[in-house]
Length: 206
Image (cartoon, rainbow, N blue to C red; front, top):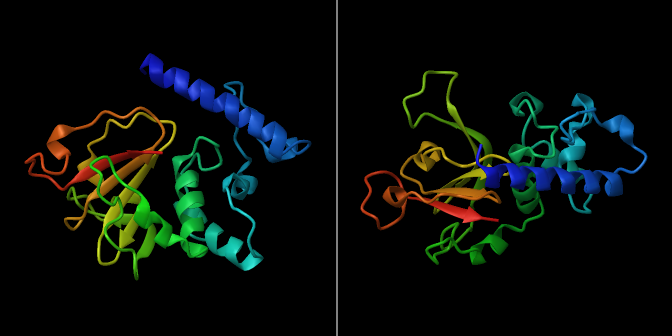
């Protein structure tokens, strides 16, 4: 693992520990003990890992149910979970009717990252696709798919280096976005307008 990535993850863990001490003071019973310093909720407490703003109980329930327990990743309870981050951000945006706000988000090429309009756009979490010819029951799962007049497949990375081919998450000719805070390496052969044969993919650091 690159030194830059190791330093980044160490800083993440320090900040997560500070957040735990502040937000969950006196609630050590919610967490597992990890010598590595990782902040991880116990299996029956993982819903605490979702960052949900003040809202009604009904809205909170809708956000929590965006990803069913059976589709949660093994490390969903870790504060380093990219899946939990994606559900927190985009589940909240959809349930609280804030999708129009994304119209102003630009990708690296200066164009609207989520298309010219988000009217009637539907979000799907852990969307199963077969763009690489995967066998049945072994489909690739995309973190978030925007389907409407403009389609976007979105993959979120928080604590892992994004070296995977971004085209893996593109489907039906839709562009894909890789969203995350870790250092990214751009692939010119997949950039819009580069002449590459694959679906357009864009990186959009948080």
